Image (cartoon, rainbow, N blue to C red; front, side, top):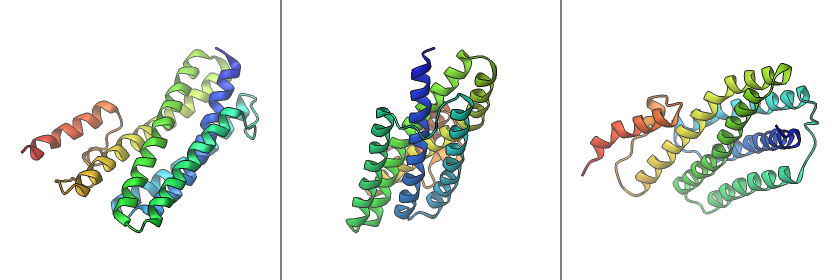
Length: 199
């Protein structure tokens, strides 16, 4: 394994989780659905914990968690852009549209989070010793949370779009109702709703 690239993955993942805190704080300003607000408050707290976990992992791996690489600057810029997009939507004065924009921004952010943690799991499997044990313990603790963040919010995004289109929407979405924590479970939950939506 290329140690320099492992360091880059860890630092970018940490920077992305830091940005995720700001993204969830802003998304909560946009959320008008009570169930969605409750879910995002939980995800915000989990994301704060992920920042702490990644900071500790960097230290275990001998990486300075305060180091900012060029890749980290790109990640930081992306996070700020998502926050700005939500602020723009809020400023437009349409609360339902701002909530939908927030869902889309969270899905974009959680897609990278999900990919980062999947890669961290692969790195844990390829290493040995204390580093492998630390990475695997964090991965096993956080992976299900990341799955939930991504698949549930994708469901919210789809259902809020359907509602905005004047079509039948299921809120909270099936992914949340079925507590989907994998792509397969999310697809199954969504498919179970499809017969009810047939024309």
